[in-house]
Image 1 (cartoon, helix red, strand yellow):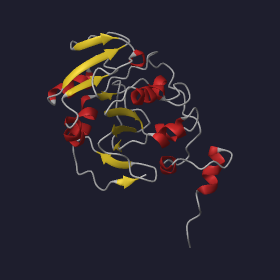
Image 2 (cartoon, rainbow, N blue to C red; image 1 turned 30 degrees about the vertical axis):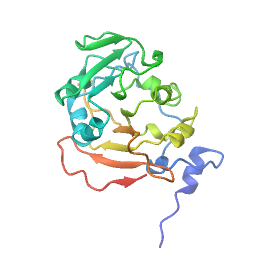
Image 3 (cartoon, rainbow, N blue to C red; image 1 turned 90 degrees about the vertical axis):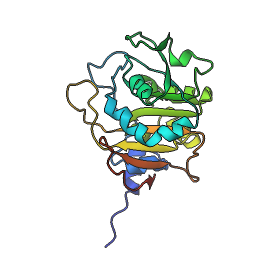
Length: 235
């Protein structure tokens, strides 16, 4: 006997019978709205990224990054948690942020959203949740990345991030689908207080690797210890 269709479920949660984006079909129980940040969060959504998260994605992406050069812009550099890993990989890092948290590299105290021209054509960061999510941030961080004409952008986000449909997120992902998503197959402990309940993914936009035609993008499994990634999936 064939399995029951999930289409009524998605019509119920999306409202108005609107067809969900292909990425949303991968996420059971997706809502039209992303949940609010946890109580007690840093007011600027500063979440230090453990080295293992950046090391894991660089094992897969470094050859593609190098096609754009060796100068990388860390647009929410914070204390340099991602920047130091990028430097160890042989990349030159330019940093910017709204707060000086002590990173010792080439730094500008300035909001990413205030730039009218990019410092480099490669962006690699864990952006503030309140500027990238759909409900509160209206996807502004990602929209500004496209407005600046960056050739390569890597953002570490909640894996459920593309499920939101409000405030133009559907349109944004339809017009600018990622080249590839790396689903982290471990829960990242950002603050040293235990791993949070959500999963995270690296979303990559690379002008040299357009997303597949017909909508959606490639999702690959990413492992902390560099295990075999297995089969890629089109979503």
